[in-house]
Amino acid sequence: MSPEQIPDLQDYGPEHLDAAFQRLSEQLAAEAPALHTPEDREQFRLHWLGRKHGRLKLISDAWLKTAPSEARKALGQHFNRLKQQIDLALETETVNGQARALEEDSVDITLPGIRPALGVEHPLVRTMIEIVGIFQRMGYSVGVGPEVETDYYNFEALNFPPDHPARDTQDTLVVAKQEHKPLRDRLLLRTHTSPVQIRTMERQPPPIRIVIPGKVHRNDAADATHSPIFHQVEGLCVDENITFSDLKGTLDHAMKELFGSSVKTRFFPSFFPFTEPSADVQISCIFCGGKGCRKCKHSGWIELLGCGMVDPSVFDSVRGKQPGYDPKKISGFAFGMGVDRIAMMKYGISDIGLLYSGDMRFLEQFA
Image 1 (tube, rainbow, N blue to C red):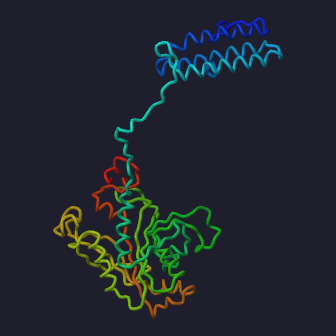
Image 2 (image 1 turned 135 degrees about the vertical axis):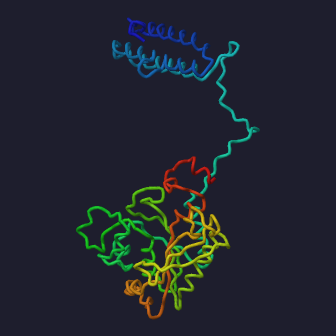
């Protein structure tokens, strides 16, 4: 609205103020009956109450600039009453010449409601829960630990000396500005959940049966089968007279629970710094039943996890806090498997990146 459209007010006496605001009230009353739609009401509101160019704002500014101080109180009272009239016009509608309050949007309780979408477990979480549940039914408890670890718990206590070549196979993400600390105290993102095994043995004397699910980190280039973030489930069993046969029986039962009773397992010699002897575990191909297909590279077998008998040096690293871990009296086995790989096998996922993309089109398939 331009300044020339603003009514002039030459005199601020009570009679002139009453007359000026009476004219504004009449204009308002003439416009109010035409308010039929939400769009009409919004235009009316902007015309009268707009913050920058609203009619009330412009008139108020123009009149207050020239008003003597003794007239400003009366001006304010008139403007407040006019503002109330504008608000009332916005809250009422005219029907057959009669003004009535606007009806609020009502809810028809006889109509069917909108059913909220229920969340479901992420395929990784679902797979992890399934694996952990298998071992819980065998009497294992669940262990947890920090994702930011010290070099001691992640490597040294697990028989990784500083120059051990196995450290090179776990390209570690380290916390910056740790060079001033001794090597064993430097912080890093854990490369496996094995540090929880050490922490648990330091707190608890044998016997121990724990399964450890969790997120781990390695500096791997992302591709269809690798990610710098992935998940593991590891297990540890320590007691008197634990043998490799106990390990084989435990994992054979777990794989049958996970993939079906027809699945077979076989063990091949391997190497891990914290177990001796160590083994890689293969299962018969769940896609072809062991006949040979592209998934198993026509071998009939799929390598799935690693395991072995706990190395005595690992027990030695915790004996300072728990003397009961004497390798001459007790023994144990440990194992570890990648949750992401198992989830991809179970659900036919070809790219690990889909598990971390947050794409609802992908995740809704598991609802």
